[in-house]
Length: 337
Image (cartoon, rainbow, N blue to C red; front, side, top):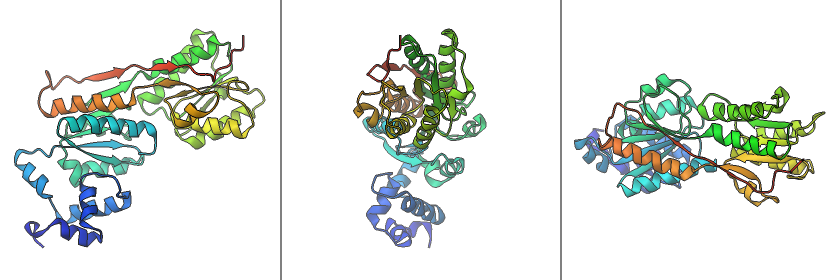
């Protein structure tokens, strides 16, 4: 079958799906499972199919499509970033393709090497690779969001992770707490490192020596929050306060406290980083470090599109935007003295 003979109907037949499903997979729309999307894109790659709209755009090397690449789409933080990206892209006449890498470096590489990765105009990326060299090899206009690696060769939009953690721990100290635990994930990127050092610095300035047994490090997952909170509260000298360093860890901590028949704000004080539904609806509501998640997507997309259009004042000069955070005080921190 020659390239010129291939149609979207042929792709649908080869994938054993409807034409509408192929269209949704190509355009990054919802209602297509990840397995089906992968199958369709693999067939497209194998037969060298170019959709008509995209083929026409090849004349000027523009597809007016952006990719937003995230580790996963279940975390409300990532969906908020995606929402901001889609909103800003649409205003400028760009479509958005959403890709999940499942925190897998091989999946991320596969996207950049594949058909769609080569044919989007630009990429908003929350990466999984830990080496700057991977990002330097991305030839498309790209911007790193949330996770940033110095010397990566691309612009970035991040938040002040250090200050967020610092303010949270200082709030505990102001309320008389000294046995303050942190549950976090890996320190491979700036977010994990900066939150840990914000915690550490706040303790140091307050004359409190960080206790190794109060630092529990996992994989940024709800089950880690649950497991480590349970361990901490069953220890010989449990902490009086826990800093949950992301939203899903905080969810796990809340569930563990409930299952231990303890009361937040009474038996244990809690602050989370980034909001989540459970933190908003438990009583008392959980104090959190709030970050402008949707704005991160909007800002990244606006910077990226300006770069694609060649409107940056100095393309060789990298821009790293650091957005501020805010401690939202609710009722989950008990005053000890």
